[in-house]
Amino acid sequence: MKTSKWKIFTNGIFKENPVLILLLGCCSVLAISVTVSGALGMGAALTFVLVCSNIVVSLLRKIIPDKVRIPCFIVVIATFVTLVEMIVHAFLPALYESLGIFLSLIVVNCIVLGRAEMFASKNGVFDSLLDGLGMGIGYTIVIGGIAVIRELVGSGTLLGARIIPEGYQIGIITQTPGGFFMFGAAIALLVWALGKKGKKFDPRIGCDGCCGNCNLGCDNKEDNAKAQAVIAKEAEAK
Amino acid sequence: MSQLALGVSPHLRSNRTTQKVMLDVIIALVPALIASVIFFGVGALIRVVISAAFCVFFEWGWEKLMKTPVTVCDLSAVVTGILIAYNVPSGMPVWQLIVGDFCAIIGVKMLFGGLGCNFMNPALVGRIVMMFSFTTSMTSYKYIGTLDALSSATPLGAGTLGWDSFLTLFLGNHAGVLGETSALAILIGGIYLCVRKVIKPIIPLCYLGSLALFSWIFGGSTPILSIFMGGAMLGAWFMATDYVTSPFTNKGKVIFGLGCGFVTAAIRVFGNYAEGVTFAILLMNLFVPYINNGTRSKPLGGVTEK
Image (cartoon, rainbow over all chains, first blue to last red; front, side):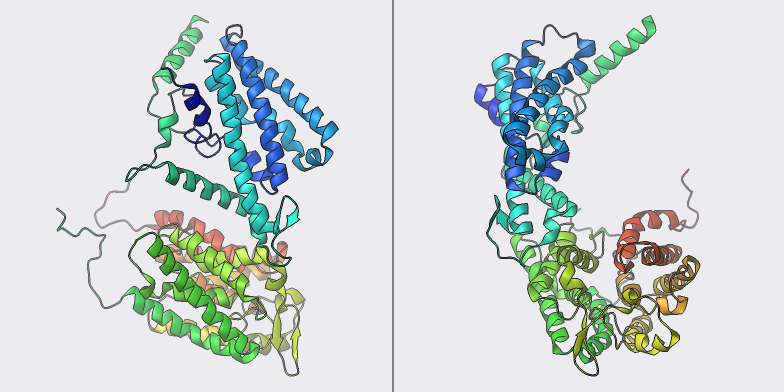
């Protein structure tokens, strides 16, 4: 199946949006989307790591043995996360403070690992670059969009500048329940926007039956069954 | 096939409609409204009216927007609005009250499919949202005492209480939110509801009974006083008995009431918050489907599933 370069790029922004459709990396979205500046910083950091790790994983995809691929991906990802962490710590200490532990936690961010497993390990370098860029931008748009509303309504500011006068804030939006509510509303909005006339959007469309650890519950269990058979055979051989 | 009306039994018809039931609830809420106007002034009445009006408006607006049948005539939104207003202090800014109305009607009721589909009591969620968002205005209780308006802690926050304060608590001449202060007024409304057979007294009695019992066991306040303090009365008679979010079997109602009382007492004695009624009822709301399944009576001659 050959898809156009443009489609690969836009896939991550709409149809296979990592946060709202694949429901990956929700943790950082819920935690970091309180301020716009933090959200944009997080989005940029994640996009950088995603693009770099996708390129390297794609380059090494013929060399990495299948059995130990996950640890190899983690090593590649961790390298770039450490790089980003050091750069941010050195040049943007304020952002480093506000992101806190979530910057280092990009190592185990499902989006990065998920794209390495689902896309980069199966596709060429340029395609993987586009995929990483699209996914990163998709993530940034979502976290940024949620952050704009949360900061505006919850704190009355935008990028630190006061817009709504003091005393007219709805505090719950900046707290955890507000984060979950905004997240749910964003999912509903995207699914509604992607729906065709009279037809509801089915998130399973974007799935190509990889049957990794995705939670979309697709019908294509063939690959999974094959993998199970191989595992059973190996166990028998032992 | 489309001419066959398929519905859940019972198919008995009666004149009882949602509208009439809700009208009874509104009538039952009137004594508490009168009491709150006496203790808190006209501001109480204004807030109740505004809150009810905005709840109806939000429901109507949502149904117009979604092009679904307009159901505001069943008066359930009015009841929700009144109950939300009963949960705020008399000095509450009106716009904050409207935010609570919005979260209750849109967030909990309409998004989940309207009346009958809400999984939690909308009025209580409205209260929680206001509590977390506007903590200062939700906890600055004001009341018109014998001299001037003054603000003080509710009896719940004040700590130790003697028996002499019983009458004050019972009549409601103390600080608190609009609808909760007068136990007498709420009791009149509750008895009216029972006489009109709108609610069965099982949940309120189990709730208040277990609240008194567990307050005594946990060593909190005097057992009898504990049920007259804070929102226990209002919660037990008007919030916990909400049809949608309470069990439909008698056995289930007992479990529900006991659970509410237990959690309320536990939060009051051990928790950070002075009042636990809201959290207790909302928590038990979440258990209602399981309580219903667990206490469903076996049909005559039916085979139990294993």
